[in-house]
Image (spheres, rainbow, N blue to C red):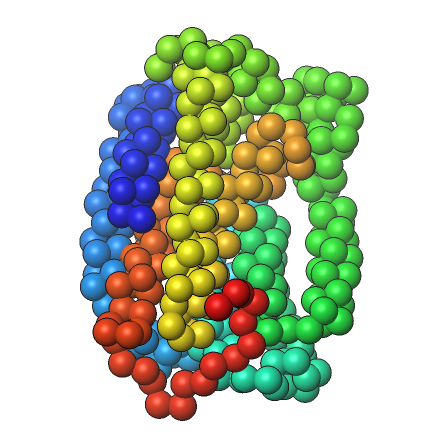
Length: 371
């Protein structure tokens, strides 16, 4: 897991520099503007990851509620005193230094739900002890994030938490109810805002408006097509010259494909698939349910976010505006995912027997795995 994290992070720094130097020069007169900031956050992310992986994950159980309360307070503060940019209010801070609480909320929700679900036992299958409290918890967090607004982050948190709920032992009827309600909610939210409808139009009928709503979707495909099998060469992308919007964030996968070709994009996919397999193996081998649920949540977080980004770029799904983990520019996103990796590695290191002490009252719940 450390090797995967290192390779993905270093690949991301190269990709961010190659995809951003044109934008950095145009906006700030500095081609190194974005990669310098990404490197600083990568160093901070390394510190957070090392600290997390050296901390026995069982300690997070007793701190789950305070951490969750702090996260909700931060999400509320964003709506009141947050920094606004590109029509959204998602950051806290002053000047160059800002924090995006919604990125760290993904990990916070995972820790809190892992503690809550692992303590419920068979009660998770009941309406009053499982489904209703679960829906309330997720609705509170989702409501704050949607007010920023950020549908992509909300969908990621929804998919993470539903997966954890299933692994914890939820019944099929509960999952059907959650899936139906979630689909209707996402469909409604995706159509009430004009810019989200534009993304849907760009997905279903991009060719009808190639210079408007369909521009970003089509240009991402053009970039991937230009790259062919082996690519145009590192730094030689044409799409980053303002053909692909935010090429250093949402569109970085298209730039990788154009410059390094299908071989590089396949290698990136292989890295994420390997991370997903190893992460779920950690979840399966954990000796306690708290560790299993944490590992499931963190792995699902990275896998789902990668699939949403790559799916949007390759036109498998509508564009969602979520960054590609490790590879897209975004200091908060990089630091948060590296912190999550540290917690995941901690589960691998401190899972009993032999590593870490159980918390008082810890129970085993129904688990969706072969023993």
